[in-house]
Amino acid sequence: MKPIRNSAKAVIVQEGRLLLIRLKDQYGDAYVFPGGGQEKGEELKDAVARECLEEIGQAVDVGELLHIREYIGANHEFAEWDADIHQVEFYFACSLVDPKASVFEGSNPDDHQVAVEWVALEALKDIRLYPKTIGELLLKKGEPRIYLGDLN
Image (cartoon, rainbow, N blue to C red; front, side):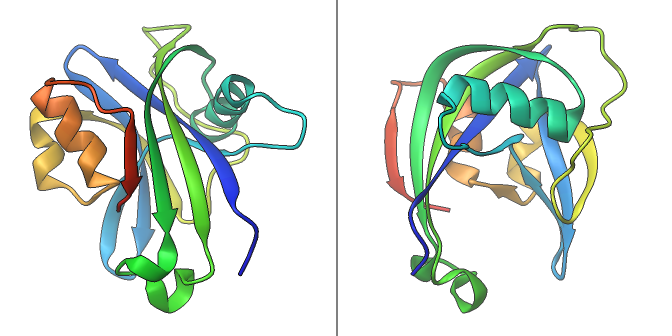
């Protein structure tokens, strides 16, 4: 099994829409939150800021920690190729430094990334979003849950 990996993700909500990365895989379109792996010596807040520049091409202000999610690949639908993955993801409330930005072209997009899109919060239930639980929590706006455990 590979070592456990930390990942920092951005939750960017503006005018009732969520900024997401659209990926294309063998099942069609999927959506994920911008962000990625923490590098040695890098704070999580710096990791999410760097990853946003790389993936969406925009600077972000990093706010409070919203959620911690684990992903243990062997426990989920992609176990066939993700069985050796264990990742701990930290989701931060973020905002665009330039809220009027309309161009989202990162310098180092993710594999299979095809676009950066604003998705209306009410449409989250209609797309393949990973992890879907965070989308559901954004819609409920109920009692905050920080640690979410192993989910996809």
